[in-house]
Amino acid sequence: MSVPRHIVKRTTPRCGPSGRFAGPAAESHFAGHAGARVHALVRGGHARGPTVCFVHGNLSSARFFEPVLASLPGTWHVVAPDLRGFGRSDPVPVDATRGLADFVDDVDAVLSDAALAPTDRPVHLVGWSMGGGVAMAYAIEHPEKVASITLLAPLSPFGFGGTKGIDGAPCHEDGAGTGAGTVAPELVRRLREGDRSDESDFSPRSILRTLYLGVASKLSPALEDLLVEEILLAAVGDDHYPGTHRDSSHWPGVAPGTRGVANTMSPLYCNLSAFVGVAAVRPVLWVRGSDDLIVSDHSMLDLGHLGALGVVAGWPGPEVFPAQPMVSQTEALLQRAEMRGGTVVEAVLQGCGHAPHLEDEEHVLEVLVPFVGSAERSRR
Image 1: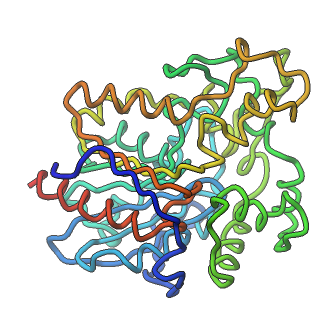
Image 2 (image 1 turned 30 degrees about the vertical axis):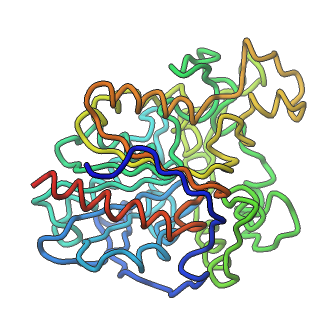
């Protein structure tokens, strides 16, 4: 690989090329059968070009990638699936006890369909947030099908919340303080009611503005409206978002159930530490924003951090339930992969929040395009 490991951008991010949003850049297709269809955006490329698969995060869809898809090299064959219960995919129930495996199956359904993607070559995965976890899980399950992995503000290898230290030791054996029971009921209510306003901090529009994006970032009105509509397509309920929960004797009194999206990321079911073996033999690009409020060592959605701030009462202290060091956990795992001979490129975008591809498309493309190109040449 000819790209240096650390690339730090010290510029103010901007939304897309000159803040524009060009509209659809790919066509809609479906894989699978009625009742279990997986929708995907597909843009054909050159017969000898790389196949690149974009995997979206929680409460989003494939269309969150549309601005960047329009700027990718025309030789790339691009696919971007909607995971089950999101976008235009069927709302198939999510079995959280499998961790992220249901979503891995959705991605594989698209990549295994010759009408949607070439099946004779490995794929370059690009996963954002929860989709970064799905990309890691896919690479663990199907290493022979993967050429490279790009992680955009990815989920920690040890799930979301409820772990301590860089090795991801669980705070409680039942996953207390993680999963569906920690999701704000007001957000769930507003999702269910299709709220498009910005009258509440818990409306999807407000969440998009204040948590997905950094404070210096602002989307065009047309793009913001589109993304709010995409968030509102999410299936809501016990089998979907956020899922089920149960009582716990540990702080804060709730633990993950066995169904639904939020529980798939609980450390009770999600452990991607085996990704170190994949990253030792497949190149990895890690892109993150310096001002990410969701995936951070001080995440504003992590009960350990919120407890320390006094936002959640009864916090038992840092020895019992500290803030999860999400970024440090990812960094430590990738460093172990490097020690085993792996290639890792890291790009930290200053002033950028949780959505680098929306906030700072220019610099994401600046690192992504040569990274995929170099990985593709190395594969051959």
